[in-house]
Structure formats: structure tokens, C-alpha cells
Image (cartoon, rainbow, N blue to C red; front, side, top):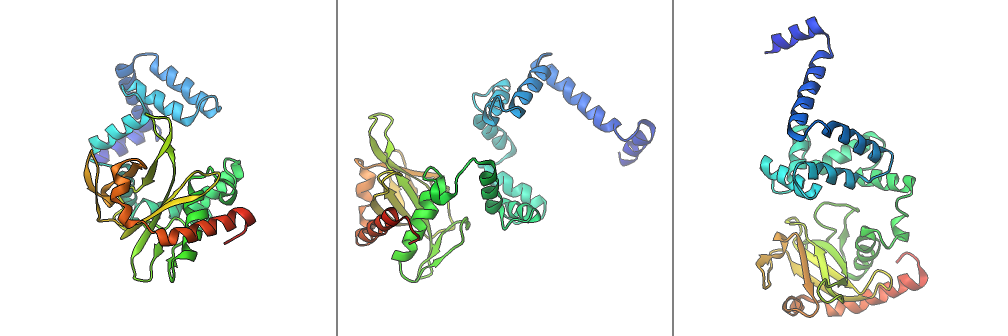
Length: 292
């Protein structure tokens, strides 16, 4: 096979194999989607590059051409076909084939080649330069504002003798004085789709098996930043609901209503003695707008 490829290159030139592959792809695509598909795809790609449509709109168009409602649905189907349950597994395998431990290490390597500390540093610089995001300390809409700028800074002052991890540390944010790894999660009250009233919390656990405990800090809203609940729950703790009975660290998301049974069930894990200190720290931050 190798000799045949070499002979083909000698007879027809270096670009022949690439042209042949492109022709086969074009033939198969037209056969599957019709004569107009290639023209439509070029048109949509041009619109995306010119900023007329978003990347998400372009991807959703591709997905619909393959019989799926959204790109996410199509992507999940492709992952399942390849034998992966989650995107992270797929990315880790790709990174491992390149000689890295996981995708996070590979992304950090790429960022460091460009002169940045890690991938997070590269992304922060990119968003700042393009004007997409303000610095996290000024941007309450930023997903990390509560988790890093507010929660982690406050909690490191409230819990004694903790070892605080760098931002974007994988799996946990603190090591407590007993050696346990603690992952900090935050949420504000969210709108209940049925009642239209803000009565639910949602914490992104993301199947995290690294942390020993999850510290869940609940605020009323991003504007006022009044802490109203704080729980410390072991990752292996089984949480029961009407739908399922699962360990906390087996969950992708942990959502519940302030009027439901779950909030009563986890009340034994609530840190009421620490909450007053959190409230006081938040008040200092809001009034002085200084580092805590």
C-alpha cells in the first residue's frame, strides 16, 4: 500500500491524493444531501466568517442537514457512535494520543507555547483583547464571578488553615486543615419554569469524583449578593429525590427548590454558624469594593 501511494505521487504529483480525497468527499456529500448542499454550505460558512450568523447558528444548520434539531444533539449522537459518554472523555483520549495526560494538560501546553501561563490565562487575555468580557472582578455576569472573585476569596478567610488552590485547579478549590479536598459551588435563585417565581438553586457538580466535599454557597441574586444558605456535603452522600437516588458526585447538576423536600433533607449539612461571617464579608466587599 505504501509503495502504491509513493508511485501515485511520483506519477501524478504531490497534490493528487488530496484532490482525489476531496473529490470523493464531494461525491459522497452530493449523493447524501443533493446537488445544492455544497453551495449552501459555502454560503453559510461565508456568512459565519463575515459575522452575519454566529458559530452556533452555523453548527445548528449543519446538524439539521444531518437530521438533528441542534448541533448538541448531533454531537452527542456522534460521541455515542464512537463509544464515549461525555465530551471530556473524547477530548482526553485525543490528548493522550498526542502524549498528554488529559485535554487540560494539552490545552495548557498549547497556551504555554504562545507565551501564556496556561489555557485559562490565554482565554482571559483573548476575551480582554477582543472586548468580549470585562475583567472578572468587574463583571457580575461572568460565570466565574461568584465562584472565584466572591466565594473563594471570602471562604478562604472564614475557614481556618486552608490551602487555597490556583484558579482553574482541576476538581477542587481548597484543602482543609484535615486534608480533605473541597470544591466550591455557587448558585443564585433561578426562575421556576412552572410558577415564574425564583425558587430554585442549581449547582454544577459535573460528575466530580476528585473532591471529597462540596461547599455549596447560595445567593439571592448577582446584583445584591446576599448569601442565604451554605452547605458542606460529602461527595459520596446519597441525595434522594422524587426522580432518583444518587450520590452527589454522580450528578451532572444538583438542582432543587427552596420549597421542596431536598432542601429539608440537606438541612443537616447547613453551616449556619459560618453563614453570618460570609454575610459580613460580602457586606464589606459591596460597601468598600476592596480586596477582602
